Image (cartoon, rainbow, N blue to C red; front, side, top):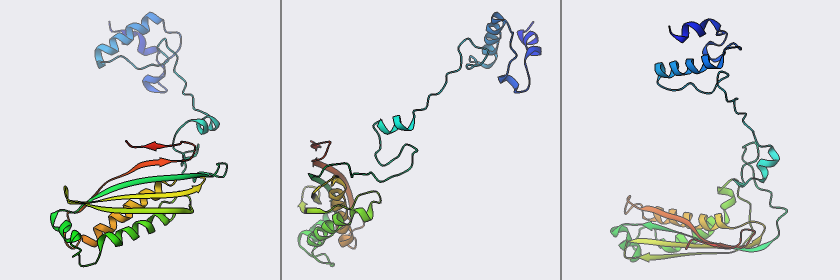
Length: 225
């Protein structure tokens, strides 16, 4: 006789299979579990019928979450926030970023010979990159408005892959770093190169935007290589 015929009359049906009456012998429970496994192909999940009590999920307190490493622009409730840098000390901070603009042979030759219809591509992109660094806090919503002491943007033609290699450097003396300013500089410069050359080619690709080096602040120095 199936064990179900013995057990089922003793099961409370208020919540279907998940709510069982107390007082069922443990050997009957084990036999029921084996029969359920033979029917359904897997063992039943942990429940009041099992020997192991359900595990209680422990949620960290807000104070504990604040001390755990993670995203600085997210508060303990998961909401976006601007980081308060007022407790930090001023220090000299430098960041260098880079990117490449793959022009293709046709557009590269036009840029190299300064025959692009819109004008001098490298000079215009250089100015755009400097302007972009100064406008970073207007473009990236949670960035601080930083007083930059220096911005450098260099653009170099690379014949090997018909590209423009862009390097940007931002410097300040303040409470927070200038990584985003350096990356904004090379990104805006790259977009400007695209805009200046798009009439000659639609196949231009801006790639490899990344931070190369940073110094200053609590985290100290870091370099990609």
